[in-house]
Length: 221
Image (cartoon, rainbow, N blue to C red; front, top):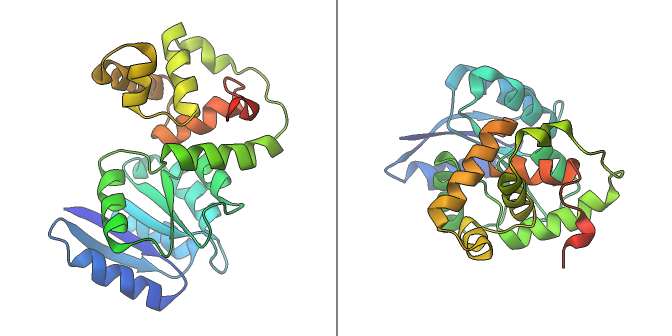
């Protein structure tokens, strides 16, 4: 059973999500929160698998709550999906940097929301290649030129190559085709890279690829 925590300051939004998710045999909404501080408290109490987090809430907003939860070692298993009104929200990149596993627009189709909860609970990042490219191109270009990170020294040449491709928004299958290896081998390289860098999931690899200077926004089409 996938345990979900809903964090949104609009009761009607929470009620709609709860009705949709609770109707699934493998998903249970275990709690609700109307602001970021309550979301962090509920997360520590309920230990959900997935947190659907509104980015704009009174008091402690979703961005700050995401950072709190992602920094708590007791909540390593919790995956945060940011809820936003617009795909290119100015806070989305910061949320990914802070530990979120992806994002959804609030008017997403019900079937997509259900798929997203299951995918994130399984450990996948909720970032399609097209969304990754647009997000990074939009926001990473605003950052200062990054300094080479010493953390890259822990990676093999192939792992650096794989992380750069993840940063470009390629899937494991696309990485496998580019490097002429099997999808399983590509997945293994991605997993090892995540372990070495202490990344929660693929979303953090994308952020690190840019922040470390391994990939530059200008390289994107």
